Length: 326
Image 1 (cartoon, one colour):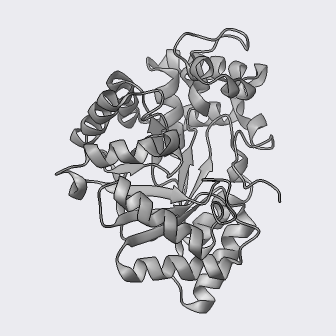
Image 2 (cartoon, one colour; image 1 turned 180 degrees about the horizontal axis):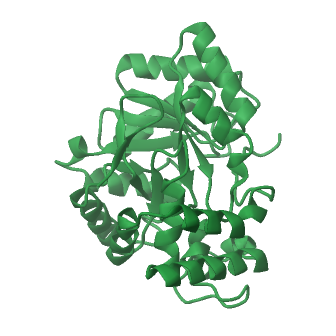
């Protein structure tokens, strides 16, 4: 396994991380625990979840899986998206994220979170309030590092400036949709993160499975695929993304590898990327994803992939999650 520092911090994370959005939903508890244990045995030390994944089941299952193994992983979770209908059940106010941290600690069966992330920018709460609450969590020992998710570059830069000016804990990382099918972070976020020493953690690195090559057409939905088990995912399917997957597949075929492995290898090669979180619903999927670590891309291959995915630099983000407008 290859390990990298998370941004400019001293924390080292595996180049390939484990995403757990499907645990408790598209993967049952037994399978999810098998995947977690296989990931740890394979050298993956970064496990990412959130307080809303599968209702909260993802966190609970991870807590079960990490009994006697907690010390082997860098455990990351998130809070800030909608958890309920009450006035303080969403956003990154002090009251909300403190409540959610305590609940996540109980579900995860741990007394500390390695990386606590704000799931999205909250325009209704002053950034200083959020950052002071996070700083208190770090000082208490319940949180070791803090990160952002779904922040625009200007939002993240504003947060970093407040942390520096006020002497508060600063965001070490940021999660963002980033893949060959979504290169929009390269316009502003990637340069900013390189300049400020913030590690990028891409989510949807395979565009929700589109870059695995499993979709041959918009209306051809394979059994067991994400679009099959979650009909709302079909909104991500388009002729453009499916054509991209086909073209990446042709490059992969010439290299004797798979579309998904090549897509992951390209992403791990991008500047500022610290770890790429990939989900799995079967142990075999995880094992196949791990093979991306063995790929060494030539300059010619990188240029080829950059060229065929260039329309996605100036396109719309593949996915972004924000709070509802009040």
